[in-house]
Image 1 (cartoon, helix red, strand yellow):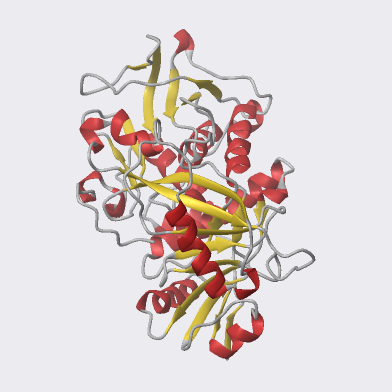
Image 2: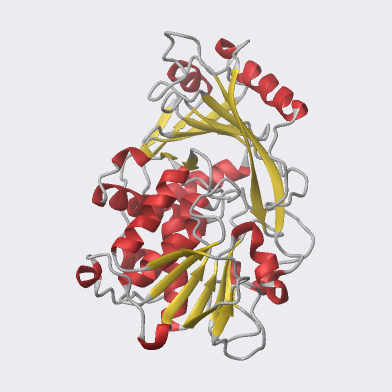
Length: 424
């Protein structure tokens, strides 16, 4: 049996922010900034300095610039660099989040904004509408809650029972009692290039971007400037620290011991020649949380992607060696051949080592720094954050411009020093 919901709708900004109990920003100055010249206040001081040019920081900078603010965006290695959590070729964007409807709303809003940006800059290929298939079995409370959330948000989806799942995707082995949620409008974001496109567009609109390493802020009360390791002062009226796996180091008073970078390994296996079963549209982006794996179809000829979502060991994003391990490769291959028997014996064609930057429970942290009234921290993507970059940028910009309180899920107070993951 196939249960369908085809009442998809696009959330506008006012509707999205309204669901979170926040007001709408008055956007202005976009046309004036379109010439691409950097805009700063007198004396070399900016309205806002954003530290970190990953998905969260880049979108925050772009939203602040769209609101007419002078913005300096800083990153120590560069947008979506090889050490960043926003690096790599692809990321899934899905709406199913169990009972965590806030992330369903964030993702729904974000997909529209990603697509708007890609259309505006002439890069529609940076979103691949592969669809997303969440595979499960039996009585799965999270999947059932996802169905309710998708229905409530009027997001197009289908519930595929075991027979329908086998018929629709014969290249996948379906476990007895298995069923799935299929989101036809979801898919994959081409991660590294997507972030670089956001930064380039922010600069086109008038933001400034530079490479620099920022030291932890000193003093308390109101921060006047951040210091770089080269001795420069970056002056601004407000600051956003969106430093990914480095957030605990840059904001130790707020988050030391509360950001947990973990080593994560990603593998790409070569598909059989002349075989289209493992490419889109025949195969969607897929998730199997029951066994801990997720992956994507063969995109741009890179091979079928597979990764283990289970948190790996602690990892140093600066010094960690990024050589894949034989053990992780063996686990990925075993799962691949179990679920996709047509890939048995497939060669490994690419492999990556990246990291998640986790909070204790998997919720983001977007809150005012406890030592300063004009500094915000933004991070804790926890392995699922990339897709939410546009909505996080809107939400964080709103906090900076209006001074409103954050959502209870995103507070510093809700983040502990012991991990107990509840969001996937």
